[in-house]
Image (cartoon, rainbow, N blue to C red; front, side):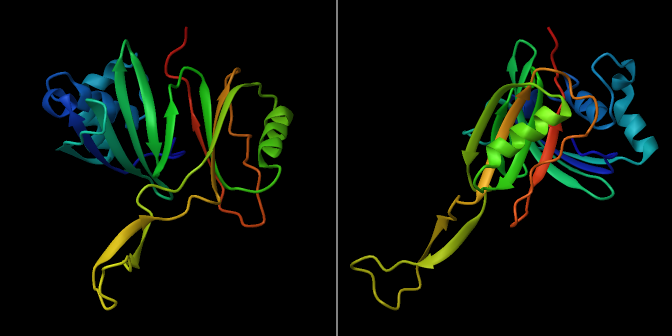
Length: 218
C-alpha cells in the first residue's frame, strides 16, 4: 500500500488484540506484512529479528477504544518518501476489514483487489474514473462513493447561543464541512497486475490513489 519499503512503523493493538498479540504471534505477522512477506512465508516466525537486521524500526502500543471492533489494530508506516496511517480489524473466519486510511473512512473486505480514490469532488468524476479503468482493462465489480471529511479536521468557533455572555471565552469544536472530499472505493473483478491506473485530476487537484490487493482468494 505504501508503494515503497517501510522504514518506520508504529503499531497499536486495541481490545482483545492488546492482550493476546504477543502470545498469538500477531506482532510477528504484522511486521512480516510490513516486510512484504505473504502469509505462506515461513520467515514470518523470525520477522522481528529480520526487521532489526534490515533496519525497519518498529514500536508496539496498546490502547482501548469502545467504538472499534475488539480485534482492531492501527498502523502508522513511513518510507523514504511516503507515509500512511491505516486501521483495520480481524472479524473472524480469516476475514479482515480495512476501515480507515489516512483519516478517511472505508470498509474494504479485500476479497477482491480494491482501489481507494480520494479526490476533490467535481462534475463527471465518476464517469472519468470508470473511463480510466476501462481503458486500463479493468472490470468494476462494485463502486461505493461518499463525500466525507478527513477524521480529525475540526475548526473552533465562539459559542454565541442565547444565554451566553457576548465576551464568553468558551469555545466549541465543529467538524469541518465534508464538501469537496470525494472518496471512491472500487472493487475490481480482475487482478491489478501493475500500477497503470491513475486517478482523474480536477483543476483543484488533491487526488490520491491506493491499491489494496486481495487478501483472500476463493
